[in-house]
Image 1 (tube, one colour):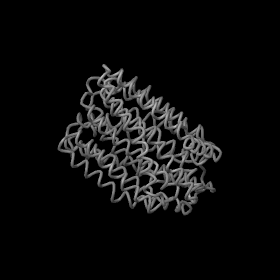
Image 2 (cartoon, rainbow, N blue to C red):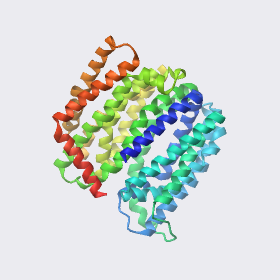
Image 3 (spheres, one colour):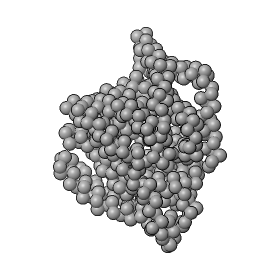
Image 4 (spheres, rainbow, N blue to C red):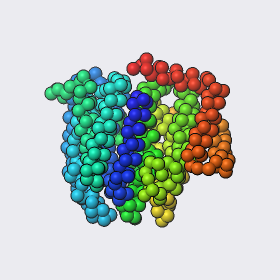
Length: 466
């Protein structure tokens, strides 16, 4: 799964690099607003049922058939809803391009609705190789089609075409690789437990959606598509690693953590090691992104995106906080505490939106600062919520973060800052930063072989469970 997601990460970054040089910031700004609406419609269509079907056992063919029909119906229902909302929004925020392209993205909902139960079936059986193919291959095909179309006729329609192609081939591969087929027997009463599980998860995801997309919608309402495009490119570059890596890890770790959820000491130990592991790997990557933002933006996006550098640096720090939050998400799912998570999200996520609103007068940079401050505050609040709901002591997460900060982040930043005084050139500074952080992480792993052994044990147990 991780290997497949690394490949998808490469595909996604390649897509971003090439298309950013062929399309304008305004195109990406309009698409960012459109995709925010699409994401909401997808959330409503799914209603947490895909995760419920993966998480809870299903012994009845009739229940699977019912879930398939519900997902497919939701896809068709999303079509007129999205068309109406986008057409109305294009007039409110003066983005006329939205109304001209919305028709072409509507097939995505039907395609995703049709593939949902096939994906859930593959996931519930822990068939990670097949799931990797379903997640990765469509992205590669979408890359080829989008780049080809951009060379022929660059414009906003290229980004829409990419979304449709990915959804279409995602459905085709899911059907081919899944040995389950829908039938004509139904048990709609039998899916009630899945709705009960999904409703809390849906509520949590809905609140998280509002938080994740508030920045785009706020900037879209107050500024031009170009400003939205600058912010969106910085945000997408940073969220690519998080989205591509956290998704497969969720599929691997949640089933395993579910099996040890009742063993308090074992769960606490694994939470500590997973938290530290996320901060050592993905968190360190975000810190390196922030330190070397000018070079990365120049290489990846080109000179027309110079305004993105400061936004990118600020958002990268927020990415570290989001790494810490991810492990809490796994524990809430594993312990079936989705309702408690929903309650926490209901009052904590609006704080992030408020901090972004506070930064809105300063444009995209101010919103980025509000984003980072809001997520930093949220991590602190989440540690107390997890202590109450999941019996994970606050000191566990604080110790993990403190250890990584003092042993890796702080000395790495100091070395990088010192190197910048003596090393000329951004490339040399990047190599020096990577080397210093790599050495620090290697020394930490060498001194803490027990942590590495624990993580290896979790992965091995997950594989045996599959």
